[in-house]
Image 1 (cartoon, rainbow, N blue to C red):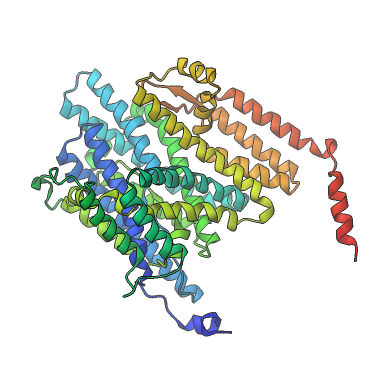
Image 2: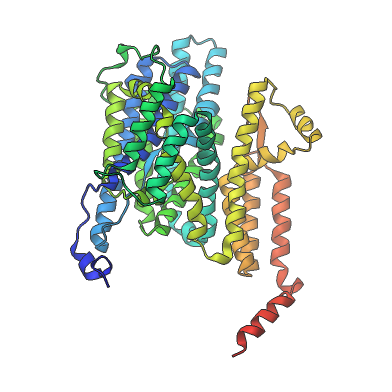
Length: 541
Protein backbone atom coordinates (compact mmCIF):
# COMPACT_ATOMS: atom_id res chain seq x y z
CA UNK A 1 0.00 0.00 0.00
CA UNK A 2 1.38 3.43 -0.96
CA UNK A 3 1.63 6.36 1.42
CA UNK A 4 -1.31 8.02 -0.32
CA UNK A 5 -3.48 5.03 0.57
CA UNK A 6 -2.26 4.63 4.15
CA UNK A 7 -5.06 5.82 6.47
CA UNK A 8 -2.61 6.31 9.36
CA UNK A 9 -0.44 8.59 7.21
CA UNK A 10 -3.51 10.46 6.00
CA UNK A 11 -4.72 11.02 9.57
CA UNK A 12 -1.45 12.85 10.37
CA UNK A 13 -1.96 15.30 7.54
CA UNK A 14 -4.02 18.47 7.82
CA UNK A 15 -6.02 20.07 5.08
CA UNK A 16 -4.81 23.62 4.57
CA UNK A 17 -7.17 26.55 4.21
CA UNK A 18 -5.94 27.09 0.66
CA UNK A 19 -4.89 24.45 -1.86
CA UNK A 20 -3.91 24.86 -5.51
CA UNK A 21 -7.26 23.50 -6.60
CA UNK A 22 -9.00 26.33 -4.78
CA UNK A 23 -7.91 28.69 -7.55
CA UNK A 24 -9.74 26.69 -10.21
CA UNK A 25 -12.72 26.26 -7.91
CA UNK A 26 -12.78 29.99 -7.20
CA UNK A 27 -12.88 30.91 -10.88
CA UNK A 28 -15.77 28.53 -11.50
CA UNK A 29 -17.85 29.54 -8.48
CA UNK A 30 -17.05 33.26 -8.78
CA UNK A 31 -18.06 33.18 -12.44
CA UNK A 32 -21.36 31.55 -11.53
CA UNK A 33 -22.03 34.17 -8.86
CA UNK A 34 -20.88 36.89 -11.25
CA UNK A 35 -23.55 35.79 -13.72
CA UNK A 36 -26.21 36.13 -11.01
CA UNK A 37 -25.03 39.61 -10.06
CA UNK A 38 -25.04 40.68 -13.71
CA UNK A 39 -28.63 39.43 -13.93
CA UNK A 40 -29.53 41.41 -10.80
CA UNK A 41 -28.17 44.63 -12.28
CA UNK A 42 -29.66 43.98 -15.72
CA UNK A 43 -33.13 42.98 -14.52
CA UNK A 44 -33.41 45.54 -11.72
CA UNK A 45 -32.44 48.42 -13.99
CA UNK A 46 -33.73 47.18 -17.35
CA UNK A 47 -37.01 45.50 -16.30
CA UNK A 48 -37.92 47.22 -13.03
CA UNK A 49 -36.39 50.61 -13.71
CA UNK A 50 -34.57 50.75 -10.39
CA UNK A 51 -32.15 53.64 -10.08
CA UNK A 52 -28.36 53.04 -10.04
CA UNK A 53 -28.35 54.45 -6.51
CA UNK A 54 -30.74 51.74 -5.30
CA UNK A 55 -29.00 48.93 -7.19
CA UNK A 56 -25.35 49.83 -6.49
CA UNK A 57 -25.91 51.62 -3.18
CA UNK A 58 -28.30 49.23 -1.42
CA UNK A 59 -29.16 45.98 -3.25
CA UNK A 60 -25.63 44.87 -4.19
CA UNK A 61 -24.18 45.66 -0.72
CA UNK A 62 -27.03 43.55 0.69
CA UNK A 63 -26.04 40.76 -1.69
CA UNK A 64 -22.47 41.05 -0.36
CA UNK A 65 -23.63 40.50 3.24
CA UNK A 66 -25.68 37.44 2.30
CA UNK A 67 -22.81 35.87 0.34
CA UNK A 68 -20.07 36.46 2.89
CA UNK A 69 -22.18 34.90 5.67
CA UNK A 70 -22.58 31.57 3.87
CA UNK A 71 -19.20 31.36 2.15
CA UNK A 72 -17.28 31.83 5.40
CA UNK A 73 -19.45 29.30 7.25
CA UNK A 74 -19.22 26.59 4.57
CA UNK A 75 -15.43 27.02 4.37
CA UNK A 76 -15.20 26.60 8.15
CA UNK A 77 -17.55 23.62 7.95
CA UNK A 78 -15.32 21.92 5.37
CA UNK A 79 -12.20 22.53 7.47
CA UNK A 80 -13.99 21.10 10.50
CA UNK A 81 -15.07 17.98 8.59
CA UNK A 82 -11.50 17.51 7.37
CA UNK A 83 -10.19 17.73 10.91
CA UNK A 84 -12.81 15.27 12.22
CA UNK A 85 -12.19 12.69 9.50
CA UNK A 86 -8.45 13.17 9.02
CA UNK A 87 -9.01 13.68 5.30
CA UNK A 88 -7.44 16.31 3.05
CA UNK A 89 -9.88 16.08 0.13
CA UNK A 90 -12.96 17.70 1.73
CA UNK A 91 -14.68 20.28 -0.46
CA UNK A 92 -16.87 23.06 0.96
CA UNK A 93 -20.48 23.27 -0.12
CA UNK A 94 -20.78 25.84 -2.92
CA UNK A 95 -23.08 28.76 -2.16
CA UNK A 96 -24.56 31.74 -3.94
CA UNK A 97 -27.65 33.49 -5.32
CA UNK A 98 -30.56 31.25 -6.31
CA UNK A 99 -31.12 31.75 -10.06
CA UNK A 100 -34.69 30.45 -10.18
CA UNK A 101 -35.73 32.62 -7.24
CA UNK A 102 -33.98 35.60 -8.82
CA UNK A 103 -36.19 35.41 -11.91
CA UNK A 104 -39.29 34.61 -9.85
CA UNK A 105 -38.78 37.57 -7.54
CA UNK A 106 -38.28 39.94 -10.46
CA UNK A 107 -41.02 38.78 -12.83
CA UNK A 108 -43.60 37.28 -10.48
CA UNK A 109 -43.33 39.56 -7.45
CA UNK A 110 -41.58 42.90 -7.99
CA UNK A 111 -42.74 43.58 -11.56
CA UNK A 112 -46.45 43.00 -10.71
CA UNK A 113 -45.96 45.14 -7.59
CA UNK A 114 -44.42 47.90 -9.70
CA UNK A 115 -47.28 47.82 -12.20
CA UNK A 116 -49.87 47.80 -9.41
CA UNK A 117 -48.20 50.81 -7.79
CA UNK A 118 -48.33 52.72 -11.07
CA UNK A 119 -52.00 51.87 -11.50
CA UNK A 120 -52.67 53.33 -8.05
CA UNK A 121 -51.18 56.61 -9.23
CA UNK A 122 -47.79 56.47 -7.47
CA UNK A 123 -44.98 58.35 -9.19
CA UNK A 124 -42.01 56.40 -10.56
CA UNK A 125 -39.82 56.91 -7.49
CA UNK A 126 -42.55 55.78 -5.09
CA UNK A 127 -43.51 52.84 -7.32
CA UNK A 128 -39.86 51.75 -7.46
CA UNK A 129 -39.50 51.85 -3.68
CA UNK A 130 -42.77 49.95 -3.23
CA UNK A 131 -41.67 47.17 -5.62
CA UNK A 132 -38.31 46.93 -3.84
CA UNK A 133 -40.02 46.68 -0.45
CA UNK A 134 -42.22 43.83 -1.72
CA UNK A 135 -39.04 42.13 -2.92
CA UNK A 136 -37.64 42.42 0.60
CA UNK A 137 -40.83 40.84 1.94
CA UNK A 138 -40.47 37.90 -0.46
CA UNK A 139 -36.82 37.43 0.48
CA UNK A 140 -37.68 37.52 4.20
CA UNK A 141 -40.43 34.93 3.70
CA UNK A 142 -38.11 32.66 1.75
CA UNK A 143 -35.46 32.90 4.48
CA UNK A 144 -37.96 31.98 7.19
CA UNK A 145 -39.13 28.96 5.19
CA UNK A 146 -35.53 27.86 4.58
CA UNK A 147 -34.70 28.25 8.28
CA UNK A 148 -37.81 26.34 9.35
CA UNK A 149 -37.19 23.67 6.73
CA UNK A 150 -33.81 22.89 8.29
CA UNK A 151 -35.67 21.31 11.23
CA UNK A 152 -37.39 18.62 9.12
CA UNK A 153 -35.19 18.30 6.05
CA UNK A 154 -33.08 15.44 7.41
CA UNK A 155 -36.21 13.31 7.75
CA UNK A 156 -37.09 14.03 4.13
CA UNK A 157 -33.57 13.12 3.12
CA UNK A 158 -33.65 9.78 4.95
CA UNK A 159 -37.02 8.91 3.40
CA UNK A 160 -35.87 9.70 -0.14
CA UNK A 161 -33.73 7.27 -2.14
CA UNK A 162 -30.59 8.75 -3.67
CA UNK A 163 -32.00 8.09 -7.13
CA UNK A 164 -34.84 10.48 -6.22
CA UNK A 165 -32.57 13.34 -5.18
CA UNK A 166 -29.68 13.38 -7.64
CA UNK A 167 -31.57 13.13 -10.97
CA UNK A 168 -33.53 16.28 -10.12
CA UNK A 169 -30.29 18.23 -9.96
CA UNK A 170 -29.00 16.48 -13.06
CA UNK A 171 -32.06 17.56 -15.04
CA UNK A 172 -31.45 21.18 -14.03
CA UNK A 173 -27.74 20.84 -14.77
CA UNK A 174 -28.35 19.29 -18.17
CA UNK A 175 -31.01 21.75 -19.28
CA UNK A 176 -30.49 25.10 -17.62
CA UNK A 177 -26.68 24.87 -17.37
CA UNK A 178 -25.28 22.51 -19.99
CA UNK A 179 -27.59 23.28 -22.91
CA UNK A 180 -27.65 27.01 -22.20
CA UNK A 181 -23.87 27.35 -22.20
CA UNK A 182 -23.39 24.83 -25.01
CA UNK A 183 -25.57 26.98 -27.27
CA UNK A 184 -23.60 30.06 -26.28
CA UNK A 185 -20.34 28.19 -26.95
CA UNK A 186 -21.34 27.53 -30.54
CA UNK A 187 -22.67 31.07 -30.94
CA UNK A 188 -19.13 32.38 -30.31
CA UNK A 189 -17.05 29.42 -31.56
CA UNK A 190 -13.57 30.99 -31.55
CA UNK A 191 -13.73 31.85 -27.86
CA UNK A 192 -16.21 29.16 -26.82
CA UNK A 193 -14.53 26.14 -28.37
CA UNK A 194 -11.01 27.25 -27.41
CA UNK A 195 -11.92 27.60 -23.73
CA UNK A 196 -14.01 24.41 -23.83
CA UNK A 197 -11.00 22.54 -25.18
CA UNK A 198 -8.79 23.81 -22.35
CA UNK A 199 -11.33 22.87 -19.69
CA UNK A 200 -11.99 19.38 -21.09
CA UNK A 201 -8.26 18.69 -21.50
CA UNK A 202 -7.26 19.77 -18.00
CA UNK A 203 -10.22 18.43 -16.02
CA UNK A 204 -11.20 15.26 -17.86
CA UNK A 205 -7.65 14.57 -19.08
CA UNK A 206 -6.29 15.16 -15.56
CA UNK A 207 -3.31 17.23 -16.75
CA UNK A 208 -1.97 20.64 -15.80
CA UNK A 209 -0.09 23.36 -17.62
CA UNK A 210 3.64 23.82 -17.12
CA UNK A 211 4.37 26.06 -14.20
CA UNK A 212 1.38 24.46 -12.45
CA UNK A 213 -0.91 27.21 -13.75
CA UNK A 214 -4.55 26.25 -13.05
CA UNK A 215 -6.55 25.29 -16.12
CA UNK A 216 -9.42 27.57 -15.15
CA UNK A 217 -7.10 30.57 -15.04
CA UNK A 218 -5.63 29.68 -18.45
CA UNK A 219 -9.12 29.29 -19.96
CA UNK A 220 -10.31 32.67 -18.68
CA UNK A 221 -7.09 34.45 -19.69
CA UNK A 222 -7.10 33.04 -23.23
CA UNK A 223 -10.86 33.51 -23.52
CA UNK A 224 -10.58 37.16 -22.47
CA UNK A 225 -7.76 37.79 -24.95
CA UNK A 226 -9.74 36.16 -27.76
CA UNK A 227 -12.84 38.08 -26.70
CA UNK A 228 -11.03 41.40 -27.08
CA UNK A 229 -9.53 40.46 -30.45
CA UNK A 230 -12.74 39.06 -31.94
CA UNK A 231 -14.98 41.94 -30.92
CA UNK A 232 -16.94 40.34 -28.10
CA UNK A 233 -15.88 43.25 -25.90
CA UNK A 234 -17.46 46.54 -26.98
CA UNK A 235 -14.63 49.02 -26.45
CA UNK A 236 -16.93 51.96 -27.06
CA UNK A 237 -19.33 50.97 -24.28
CA UNK A 238 -17.16 51.25 -21.18
CA UNK A 239 -19.07 51.88 -17.92
CA UNK A 240 -19.34 55.37 -16.50
CA UNK A 241 -16.78 56.25 -13.85
CA UNK A 242 -19.64 57.24 -11.52
CA UNK A 243 -20.31 53.57 -10.84
CA UNK A 244 -17.10 53.36 -8.81
CA UNK A 245 -17.29 54.19 -5.12
CA UNK A 246 -17.48 52.58 -1.70
CA UNK A 247 -21.03 51.57 -0.71
CA UNK A 248 -21.02 49.89 2.70
CA UNK A 249 -24.09 47.79 3.57
CA UNK A 250 -26.55 49.05 6.14
CA UNK A 251 -29.77 47.61 7.62
CA UNK A 252 -33.05 48.55 5.92
CA UNK A 253 -35.36 47.51 8.72
CA UNK A 254 -37.75 50.42 8.19
CA UNK A 255 -38.37 49.49 4.56
CA UNK A 256 -38.77 45.85 5.50
CA UNK A 257 -41.33 46.64 8.18
CA UNK A 258 -43.24 48.82 5.71
CA UNK A 259 -43.88 45.73 3.57
CA UNK A 260 -45.20 43.58 6.43
CA UNK A 261 -48.90 44.30 5.99
CA UNK A 262 -51.42 41.48 5.99
CA UNK A 263 -52.80 42.25 2.54
CA UNK A 264 -49.34 42.22 0.97
CA UNK A 265 -48.38 38.96 2.67
CA UNK A 266 -51.59 37.23 1.49
CA UNK A 267 -51.21 38.66 -2.04
CA UNK A 268 -47.74 37.19 -2.59
CA UNK A 269 -47.82 34.03 -0.47
CA UNK A 270 -48.70 31.99 -3.58
CA UNK A 271 -45.24 32.79 -4.93
CA UNK A 272 -43.22 33.04 -1.71
CA UNK A 273 -44.30 29.67 -0.26
CA UNK A 274 -43.54 27.43 -3.26
CA UNK A 275 -40.28 29.27 -3.98
CA UNK A 276 -39.20 28.88 -0.34
CA UNK A 277 -39.99 25.16 -0.46
CA UNK A 278 -38.17 24.93 -3.79
CA UNK A 279 -35.05 26.46 -2.18
CA UNK A 280 -35.19 24.03 0.75
CA UNK A 281 -35.56 20.97 -1.45
CA UNK A 282 -32.91 22.15 -3.92
CA UNK A 283 -30.39 22.76 -1.14
CA UNK A 284 -31.26 19.39 0.39
CA UNK A 285 -30.51 17.66 -2.90
CA UNK A 286 -27.19 19.45 -3.15
CA UNK A 287 -26.23 18.22 0.32
CA UNK A 288 -27.06 14.69 -0.87
CA UNK A 289 -24.93 15.31 -3.95
CA UNK A 290 -22.01 16.30 -1.72
CA UNK A 291 -22.39 13.10 0.32
CA UNK A 292 -22.43 11.06 -2.89
CA UNK A 293 -19.09 12.71 -3.71
CA UNK A 294 -17.69 11.69 -0.30
CA UNK A 295 -18.39 14.72 1.91
CA UNK A 296 -21.15 14.12 4.47
CA UNK A 297 -22.35 17.37 5.98
CA UNK A 298 -25.05 17.65 8.69
CA UNK A 299 -28.32 18.64 7.05
CA UNK A 300 -29.78 20.89 9.77
CA UNK A 301 -26.91 23.36 10.26
CA UNK A 302 -26.15 23.46 6.52
CA UNK A 303 -29.72 24.44 5.66
CA UNK A 304 -30.07 26.75 8.64
CA UNK A 305 -27.09 28.89 7.61
CA UNK A 306 -28.47 29.04 4.11
CA UNK A 307 -31.69 30.43 5.58
CA UNK A 308 -29.73 32.89 7.72
CA UNK A 309 -27.95 34.09 4.59
CA UNK A 310 -31.30 34.80 2.92
CA UNK A 311 -32.58 36.61 6.02
CA UNK A 312 -29.38 38.70 6.07
CA UNK A 313 -30.03 39.60 2.43
CA UNK A 314 -33.49 40.94 3.27
CA UNK A 315 -32.29 42.85 6.36
CA UNK A 316 -29.55 44.61 4.40
CA UNK A 317 -31.47 45.48 1.24
CA UNK A 318 -31.18 42.53 -1.17
CA UNK A 319 -34.37 41.01 -2.58
CA UNK A 320 -32.72 37.76 -3.64
CA UNK A 321 -32.46 34.49 -1.65
CA UNK A 322 -29.27 32.48 -1.37
CA UNK A 323 -28.87 28.75 -1.85
CA UNK A 324 -26.48 25.85 -1.43
CA UNK A 325 -25.31 25.64 -5.01
CA UNK A 326 -25.46 22.84 -7.49
CA UNK A 327 -22.04 21.49 -8.53
CA UNK A 328 -20.18 20.26 -5.43
CA UNK A 329 -18.78 17.16 -7.24
CA UNK A 330 -17.42 19.39 -10.00
CA UNK A 331 -15.66 21.77 -7.65
CA UNK A 332 -14.25 18.82 -5.71
CA UNK A 333 -13.00 17.17 -8.90
CA UNK A 334 -11.15 20.42 -9.68
CA UNK A 335 -9.29 20.09 -6.37
CA UNK A 336 -11.21 22.82 -4.57
CA UNK A 337 -11.31 22.46 -0.80
CA UNK A 338 -12.20 25.23 1.70
CA UNK A 339 -10.32 28.22 0.35
CA UNK A 340 -12.32 28.62 -2.84
CA UNK A 341 -15.39 29.43 -0.77
CA UNK A 342 -13.55 32.15 1.16
CA UNK A 343 -12.08 33.59 -2.05
CA UNK A 344 -15.54 33.66 -3.60
CA UNK A 345 -17.05 35.46 -0.60
CA UNK A 346 -14.29 38.08 -0.52
CA UNK A 347 -14.39 38.62 -4.29
CA UNK A 348 -18.17 39.01 -4.41
CA UNK A 349 -18.12 41.37 -1.42
CA UNK A 350 -15.49 43.62 -2.99
CA UNK A 351 -17.20 43.94 -6.37
CA UNK A 352 -20.59 44.53 -4.73
CA UNK A 353 -19.51 47.34 -2.40
CA UNK A 354 -17.05 49.11 -4.74
CA UNK A 355 -19.11 49.35 -7.94
CA UNK A 356 -16.50 47.47 -9.95
CA UNK A 357 -19.06 44.88 -11.08
CA UNK A 358 -19.92 46.95 -14.16
CA UNK A 359 -16.25 47.16 -15.19
CA UNK A 360 -15.50 43.47 -14.67
CA UNK A 361 -18.49 42.36 -16.72
CA UNK A 362 -17.43 44.73 -19.48
CA UNK A 363 -13.77 43.69 -19.59
CA UNK A 364 -14.16 39.89 -19.20
CA UNK A 365 -16.78 38.44 -21.56
CA UNK A 366 -18.94 35.67 -20.19
CA UNK A 367 -17.72 33.41 -23.00
CA UNK A 368 -14.24 33.45 -21.45
CA UNK A 369 -15.29 31.34 -18.47
CA UNK A 370 -18.54 29.65 -19.34
CA UNK A 371 -16.79 26.38 -20.28
CA UNK A 372 -16.09 25.86 -16.58
CA UNK A 373 -19.79 26.09 -15.76
CA UNK A 374 -20.62 23.79 -18.69
CA UNK A 375 -18.18 21.24 -17.28
CA UNK A 376 -19.94 21.46 -13.90
CA UNK A 377 -23.23 20.60 -15.62
CA UNK A 378 -21.65 17.57 -17.27
CA UNK A 379 -20.19 16.29 -13.99
CA UNK A 380 -23.49 16.76 -12.16
CA UNK A 381 -25.36 14.73 -14.79
CA UNK A 382 -22.75 11.97 -14.72
CA UNK A 383 -22.93 11.77 -10.93
CA UNK A 384 -26.64 10.98 -11.02
CA UNK A 385 -25.77 7.70 -12.74
CA UNK A 386 -22.45 6.96 -11.02
CA UNK A 387 -23.64 7.46 -7.42
CA UNK A 388 -26.85 5.42 -7.62
CA UNK A 389 -27.25 1.64 -7.78
CA UNK A 390 -27.03 0.35 -11.32
CA UNK A 391 -30.49 -1.20 -11.24
CA UNK A 392 -31.97 2.23 -10.46
CA UNK A 393 -30.71 3.75 -13.72
CA UNK A 394 -34.25 3.93 -15.21
CA UNK A 395 -35.30 6.05 -12.22
CA UNK A 396 -32.42 8.41 -12.93
CA UNK A 397 -33.49 8.80 -16.55
CA UNK A 398 -37.09 9.49 -15.54
CA UNK A 399 -35.87 12.04 -12.98
CA UNK A 400 -34.03 13.95 -15.70
CA UNK A 401 -37.13 14.52 -17.79
CA UNK A 402 -39.06 17.11 -15.71
CA UNK A 403 -36.00 19.37 -15.50
CA UNK A 404 -35.49 19.11 -19.24
CA UNK A 405 -39.21 19.76 -19.70
CA UNK A 406 -38.98 22.92 -17.59
CA UNK A 407 -36.05 24.07 -19.69
CA UNK A 408 -38.09 23.30 -22.81
CA UNK A 409 -40.92 25.43 -21.41
CA UNK A 410 -38.46 28.31 -21.08
CA UNK A 411 -37.47 27.89 -24.73
CA UNK A 412 -41.13 27.82 -25.82
CA UNK A 413 -41.89 30.98 -23.86
CA UNK A 414 -38.88 32.80 -25.25
CA UNK A 415 -40.05 31.85 -28.73
CA UNK A 416 -43.53 33.18 -28.06
CA UNK A 417 -42.16 36.45 -26.72
CA UNK A 418 -39.83 36.92 -29.69
CA UNK A 419 -42.71 36.20 -32.06
CA UNK A 420 -45.00 38.59 -30.23
CA UNK A 421 -47.61 35.91 -29.55
CA UNK A 422 -49.90 36.51 -26.56
CA UNK A 423 -49.87 34.13 -23.62
CA UNK A 424 -53.44 32.85 -23.53
CA UNK A 425 -55.30 29.53 -23.74
CA UNK A 426 -55.60 30.10 -27.52
CA UNK A 427 -51.92 29.31 -27.92
CA UNK A 428 -52.52 25.76 -26.63
CA UNK A 429 -54.76 24.83 -29.56
CA UNK A 430 -52.33 26.31 -32.07
CA UNK A 431 -49.51 24.16 -30.70
CA UNK A 432 -51.72 21.08 -30.56
CA UNK A 433 -52.52 21.52 -34.23
CA UNK A 434 -48.81 20.94 -34.91
CA UNK A 435 -48.68 17.92 -32.60
CA UNK A 436 -47.07 19.74 -29.67
CA UNK A 437 -48.95 19.45 -26.38
CA UNK A 438 -47.67 22.68 -24.91
CA UNK A 439 -50.25 22.57 -22.11
CA UNK A 440 -48.44 19.47 -20.85
CA UNK A 441 -45.16 21.41 -21.01
CA UNK A 442 -46.61 24.27 -18.96
CA UNK A 443 -48.08 21.85 -16.41
CA UNK A 444 -44.83 19.91 -16.10
CA UNK A 445 -42.86 23.11 -15.55
CA UNK A 446 -44.74 24.08 -12.39
CA UNK A 447 -43.22 22.30 -9.42
CA UNK A 448 -40.93 20.28 -11.67
CA UNK A 449 -38.44 19.74 -8.86
CA UNK A 450 -41.17 17.97 -6.85
CA UNK A 451 -42.31 16.03 -9.92
CA UNK A 452 -38.81 14.81 -10.70
CA UNK A 453 -38.17 13.70 -7.15
CA UNK A 454 -41.49 11.89 -6.80
CA UNK A 455 -41.39 10.09 -10.15
CA UNK A 456 -37.81 8.96 -9.48
CA UNK A 457 -38.73 7.72 -6.01
CA UNK A 458 -41.78 5.86 -7.36
CA UNK A 459 -39.63 4.16 -10.01
CA UNK A 460 -36.98 3.15 -7.46
CA UNK A 461 -39.58 1.53 -5.22
CA UNK A 462 -41.24 -0.22 -8.16
CA UNK A 463 -37.87 -1.64 -9.22
CA UNK A 464 -37.38 -2.86 -5.64
CA UNK A 465 -41.02 -4.13 -5.60
CA UNK A 466 -41.99 -1.89 -2.69
CA UNK A 467 -45.41 -1.21 -4.17
CA UNK A 468 -47.00 0.24 -1.05
CA UNK A 469 -44.21 2.80 -0.66
CA UNK A 470 -44.53 3.71 -4.34
CA UNK A 471 -48.26 4.25 -3.80
CA UNK A 472 -47.62 6.55 -0.84
CA UNK A 473 -45.30 8.70 -2.96
CA UNK A 474 -48.10 9.00 -5.53
CA UNK A 475 -50.50 10.12 -2.82
CA UNK A 476 -47.97 12.80 -1.83
CA UNK A 477 -47.96 13.97 -5.44
CA UNK A 478 -51.75 14.16 -5.37
CA UNK A 479 -51.69 16.30 -2.22
CA UNK A 480 -49.11 18.68 -3.70
CA UNK A 481 -51.19 18.94 -6.88
CA UNK A 482 -54.33 19.78 -4.91
CA UNK A 483 -52.40 22.50 -3.10
CA UNK A 484 -51.30 23.94 -6.41
CA UNK A 485 -47.60 23.27 -5.76
CA UNK A 486 -47.41 20.98 -8.81
CA UNK A 487 -48.87 21.35 -12.32
CA UNK A 488 -51.19 24.24 -11.49
CA UNK A 489 -50.62 27.27 -13.73
CA UNK A 490 -52.34 30.32 -15.11
CA UNK A 491 -51.71 32.62 -18.06
CA UNK A 492 -50.49 36.17 -17.64
CA UNK A 493 -49.85 38.69 -20.35
CA UNK A 494 -46.33 37.44 -21.00
CA UNK A 495 -45.87 34.16 -19.13
CA UNK A 496 -47.43 31.13 -17.49
CA UNK A 497 -46.96 31.16 -13.73
CA UNK A 498 -47.69 28.82 -10.86
CA UNK A 499 -51.08 29.15 -9.18
CA UNK A 500 -50.61 28.12 -5.56
CA UNK A 501 -54.01 27.45 -3.99
CA UNK A 502 -55.56 26.56 -7.34
CA UNK A 503 -55.98 22.79 -7.34
CA UNK A 504 -54.56 20.85 -10.28
CA UNK A 505 -57.48 18.43 -9.99
CA UNK A 506 -56.91 16.34 -13.11
CA UNK A 507 -53.30 15.65 -12.18
CA UNK A 508 -54.23 14.88 -8.59
CA UNK A 509 -56.78 12.34 -9.85
CA UNK A 510 -54.13 10.81 -12.07
CA UNK A 511 -51.76 10.36 -9.14
CA UNK A 512 -54.53 8.88 -6.99
CA UNK A 513 -55.24 6.36 -9.75
CA UNK A 514 -51.55 5.43 -9.87
CA UNK A 515 -51.54 5.02 -6.10
CA UNK A 516 -54.59 2.75 -6.23
CA UNK A 517 -52.88 0.50 -8.77
CA UNK A 518 -49.69 0.22 -6.75
CA UNK A 519 -51.43 -0.26 -3.39
CA UNK A 520 -53.49 -3.13 -4.81
CA UNK A 521 -50.54 -4.72 -6.64
CA UNK A 522 -50.04 -7.43 -4.01
CA UNK A 523 -53.39 -8.93 -5.00
CA UNK A 524 -53.14 -8.26 -8.74
CA UNK A 525 -49.64 -9.18 -9.94
CA UNK A 526 -47.10 -11.99 -9.83
CA UNK A 527 -43.33 -11.95 -10.51
CA UNK A 528 -42.60 -12.18 -14.23
CA UNK A 529 -41.75 -15.64 -15.59
CA UNK A 530 -38.21 -14.64 -16.50
CA UNK A 531 -37.64 -13.58 -12.90
CA UNK A 532 -38.31 -17.13 -11.71
CA UNK A 533 -35.86 -18.41 -14.33
CA UNK A 534 -33.12 -16.04 -13.18
CA UNK A 535 -33.59 -17.04 -9.54
CA UNK A 536 -33.49 -20.73 -10.44
CA UNK A 537 -30.24 -20.25 -12.35
CA UNK A 538 -28.72 -18.37 -9.43
CA UNK A 539 -29.43 -21.35 -7.13
CA UNK A 540 -27.59 -23.81 -9.38
CA UNK A 541 -24.03 -24.67 -8.23
